[in-house]
Structures are given as structure tokens and as C-alpha cells.
Length: 139
Ligand code: ADP
Ligand code: MG
Image (tube, rainbow, N blue to C red; front, side, top):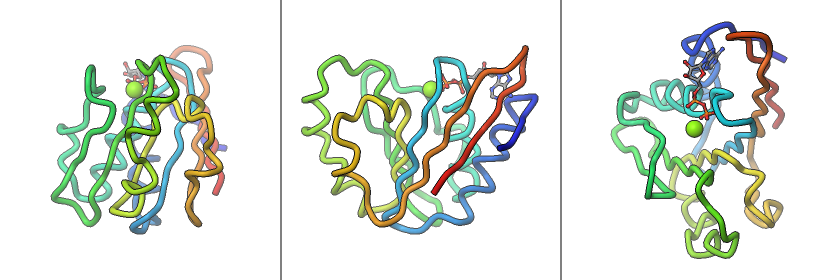
């Protein structure tokens, strides 16, 4: 369990996590709106050598692809997903093979077990008081 006190500290946790990632790895992110999931993805991108400014919260696209790093990073944000059947159309299992797949709102994937490759990490971010967040990473 890690406690952070700023967006930067949370990004640094993502940065550290990046060094352990290999092609085909999946990172499942859980946490409320504003918990810091995207902040962590920014650090993760930077850790892979991707320009962190490319990372945003996509409004209309469910999948964003960032190239130029050690591994291609596929960033999925399911916040706006209403129909779980749409997930099938994304082809997440194939995406996962091509690089690192990170999923915000992973709880919206109905059949996560099917998607899980041999290596995945679950990251749970919880709000504390003010800017405090607790981050739990399991793999
Ligand atoms: P999410 O993707 O989980 O909805 P974001 O990363 O987009 O969350 O936003 C997190 C917000 O919380 C940002 O405005 C950030 O500045 C703020 N914040 C405050 N403290 C922290 C912290 N310890 N870690 C991450 N974000 C924090
Ligand atoms: Mg987000």
C-alpha cells in the first residue's frame, strides 16, 4: 500500500510500475472519478518513454494509442461506456498482445477473467483526506 499526497506522486507510482511491464501486460485501474487514474497513466506513459502530454481523458474514443516509447501504450477509459456489449467490439484481447494495455474503470469489463493474459496488474486508488490517495497494486 502506497500513500501519495499530490498528482505528481501518483504519477511517480505509474512511472515505477512502467519499468516492470512487458509486451502483453495489462494494467487494470480501479477508483472513483478524480481518484488519480489518469494521473497514474501519465506517469506510466512517461516511464515507457511516451510523451506524457499525449495522455488525456478521451471524450469520445474509448481506446487511445501512444507510440514512441519502449512499448506501445494502449489507454482505455470506460467511464462513458453504457453498454457492456460495446467492449466486445474493442477487441481488447488482441490489443493486449500488441503492447501494454491500461484500462480505467476496469470494473465495467463484464468478463475480465477472459481478458486477463498471463501477466496483469490491478491498481486500486482510494481517496483519503484532501490530496491524500492510497494506492494498492496487486499482480
Ligand atoms: P481519474 O482519472 O481517476 O478520474 P484524474 O487523474 O483525472 O482522476 O484526476 C485526479 C485529480 O485529483 C487531479 O485534478 C489531481 O490534481 C487531483 N489530485 C490531488 N491529489 C492527488 C493525488 N495524491 N494523486 C492523484 N491526483 C491527485
Ligand atoms: Mg481518468
